[in-house]
Structure formats: C-alpha cells, structure tokens
Length: 239
Image 1: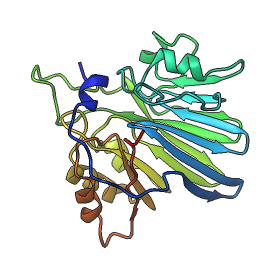
Image 2: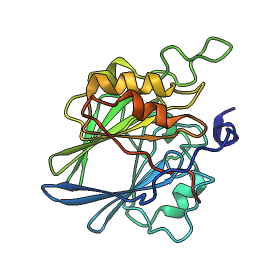
Image 3: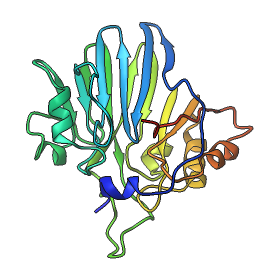
Image 4: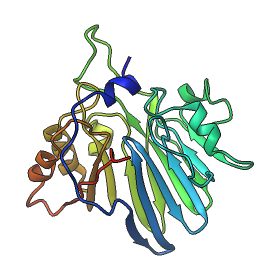
C-alpha cells in the first residue's frame, strides 16, 4: 500500500524558504497556518487549534491539543488513529468522511458537497479522487466519494486543502479561493504541471504545494508565472 511508507521513500526535495508559519488576515482576525509534515498542518485562530491529517511520521509531541481535527482519507499518511487520540481532549470535534468514521468512530461524518459550521468556521467537503492516474489493476488510488478535500471559510477568506486528488472538475470549478494547498506526487495525485493547470482553472490568490515529496515544485511555480497567482514554496519535510 501507499501509502504512509511509499510516500516517504521518495527522494529528498531541494532546500526551500524558511518561515513556515503563514499568516493570513481576515475580518475576524489573523489565521496562522503551520506546516507539520507531508499533508499535516495546524491552523490557529485565537484559542482555536485545528489540525488537518495528523499522521506519522509527523512529530506531534508538545503540540497543543486540538479543538477540531479534519481528516481527508483512510490512507496511513492522512488517518492515524493514535495521533488523532494523542491530539484529542475532552470536547475535541473530529470531522471526516464516512470511510474514516469506520475506524475513527467518534468522527462526525461530512460527505462530498456537504457543509457544516464549527464556531465561526464554515467547512465544506470537496470531492477528492483520481481521474487518470490509476493502479495497475485499473482501479483509482482514490475513489470518488470516499475522501474529502476541505474549503474552510473564516472571516471572509476561503482556505482550500485539496487532499489526495487530481485536478477534478469539482476542483477546477471552485470560486473565490484565497489560499489553496495543492498535492503533487505520482502516481497517487498529479504532476507539478498537472497541478499548475488545475490551479489556473480556479485561480486562487495564493497557491501552496503540499504532499509533494520528491516532486519538482519549482516547476509548479514556474508554470504559474504571469498568472497573478502568488506561489509560496514551503518545506513540509523538515523535522
């Protein structure tokens, strides 16, 4: 399987810009997004702590407990029941697709296309799946309807975490995305060129590669030159 192991055995990425914490102003305050590892990130707004896909080998020792945890899919580099438990406290909310809830039974299910509210956040589940990159058997690495990408709306800003996906019609149809976190690794998602093509279609204000180990993310940035999209290259693999 992938899955956690295979994604981590790919060759090392080039040195990237420091300052991993990204600050984004909204009408309700500054949202701080910190890369943790691979597809895992922490979002902070005031006292709210949100994690997306905390999973090994991400180092979570010493991290603040979660108020909300979002899980995108069942693969081991996205869903780690031990890390979810370690980051949970009394009152932690977990939101995930139904396939995840079969293992993480305390999760609240959010299906593709559905939205929910948590505190001042609106959370919308976006389909994430393969279109052309398939397993040798012909089956997709990610079935349509199984996993969720998420659009998080807060204070008038939209933050999109795409999850494990190609540039699906649903991604390409997104509107008013301020910050997009986009995967690019083969054979599970897409190439940097394919990722750039998808990003051009929905034109976020800022695009940030994640879930990219071993890929040429500089090529992604170059492909978006002249589009008006700001590309930020962050090191998601420094631990």
